[in-house]
Length: 640
Image (cartoon, rainbow, N blue to C red; front, side, top):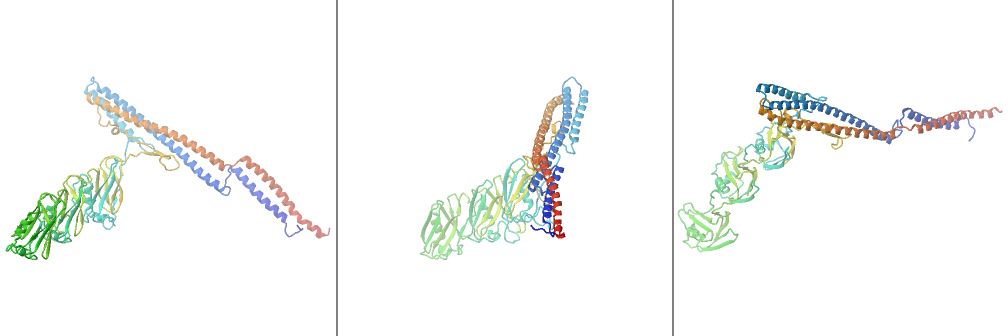
C-alpha cells in the first residue's frame, strides 16, 4: 500500500470495526439492562412469534384461574345459603313431628303451622334473593323459551300474508301437486316425517290444521276444470273434467293411510255422470255400461236395423277376456229376422255372462256374473263395423279393495273445495295420495276419517300474519326447547320447535381454557331449584294431625332434594379446585418454556459484553493511531 494523504484507508477500517463492536456492545447492554434476550423482532423473529403466543396463553390461563376461583366463590355463596335452607327444613320437620302427635290442641297446632309457614316463606326468600354478581342459582329455571319462526319468502313488506293465503304463495319454493313433508325431532327425542299433497288453493290454515293433532282434517279436493257456474252430481263427468273424452279410461291411483296402494280404472262414456264415477269408487252399485243401438229400437228390434252396419248373412263375432285371462270368441250367423233379443240370448249362453236388451231404452247390456274386478273388455265385430265396450261385473266393485269414500261438492270453479272429496274410511294418518289419470292427470289427497296425520306428533302450529310473520311450532310436552323441524318438498325450510311449559335450564358456564371446546375449556354448573315449589313443600300444612304426619314424608323428600343440590355444589367446588391446580401447573410450565426463549443468560451475555468492551477500547486506540499516519508524508515533503 502506498503512502497517501488523500484517503486514510486504515482509519476507515478501524472506524468500521469500532462501529460493529459498538453495535454489539449496545445489544449486550440492552439485554443486560432488560433481562430479555429478545427486545425486538430483529433479535429473533421466530422466537418473538413463539414467545408472544406463549405469553397470550399464560395470560388466558391466569384469567382462567381467576374465573374458576370466582366460580368457587359463587358456589360457596350458594352453598352457604343452602345451609341456611337446610336449617329451615330441619326446623320444619321438627315442627311437623311435634304437630303429628296427638297431645296438642288445634289452636296449638295453628301456632306451630304459623312458624312452619314462616320457615317456608324464608326458604323462598333465600332461594330468590341469593345471588353472586347478579347470578342466581337457587331459584331454578327463570327464562322463557323464545320460539323461532319460519318466515314467509315473498316480499311481505308489500304483501303481508294472512293465514287464509295460499301456502304456495307464502312459500314460493312450492308449487301445486308437490308433497309438503314435515320432519321433526321433539324435545323428548321423538322423530318422524309426515307429508301432505299441496294444491294451488291449499291455505296456510289448512296446513296448520294438518299439523295440529287436535284439529279436524280439512279435506283436499279435486276441483273441476271448466269455468262453469255450477256442476251438480248428475252432470256429465266429461263436462266437469273437460280433458277427458268418451272412451278414455279414468284411472284412480291411490295410497291409503295404511299404506295399501292400487289402481282401478273405469271406461268413460259420453253419458257417464259424476254420480256414476262416485258409485264406481264407493262400495255401492255400479252404473252399467251398455252398447247403444244406432236405430230407433222402439220401432224395430231386428238386429240388422238396430246395428245398421250389419246385414243378413253376416257372421257376428263376439269376443271377451274372462276373469282367468282367457280370450273367448264365437260367431253367430245373422238372418234377416234375427232380433237383438236373439243375440242377447246367444251371448247369455257364454259361461259367466248374462245379456239383456231393452227396446225402450235402445241398449244392449252385457253383465259379468262372476264376482270380481269389473269392466272386462268385450267387442262385437262383423260386417263393416266393430263395437268395443265394457262388461259390467256383478258382485264386487272394481274398487272393493279400496277403503275410500267419494263425495262431490257442487259449486263454481272459483270457490275452493268444489269437486271430488276422497276420504279414507280407516282411521289413521291423513292426506294419503291419490290421482285421476287417463286423458288428464289430477293429483290430490285423501282425507282421513278419525285421526289426523300428525296425531302422533306433539306439535301445535300457529301463524303470525304480521310483517315478517310465519309458522311457529310448539311442542306441547314440557321439556327442553328448540327441537329441530323442517319443511321439505319443492324447497327446504329448517326452523326450531318451541317447548310449551318449560324452558331450557339456564345452567352457568364456567370458562377457564384457552379455546372454546366443551370437553376441554369449560363446563357447566347446574342451577338448582330450592324454592318451596322446587322442593315440593309449597302446599304443605301441619294444621291438623293427619296433614302433619303426611308432611314428615314430604319433608324427607325435600331434604333429600336439597342434599342432592348441595352435593352438586360441593362436587363442582372440588372439581374447580382441581381445575385451578391443573391450570396453574400448565401456566407455570408454559412460563418456564417462555423463559427459555425470552430471558437472557446473564453470565453468557456478560462475557460477550466484556469482550466487546475490550474490542471497543482497542478499536478506539487503533483509530487514533491510524489518524496520525498521514502525517508521515509531511516529513517527506519537508525534506527532513
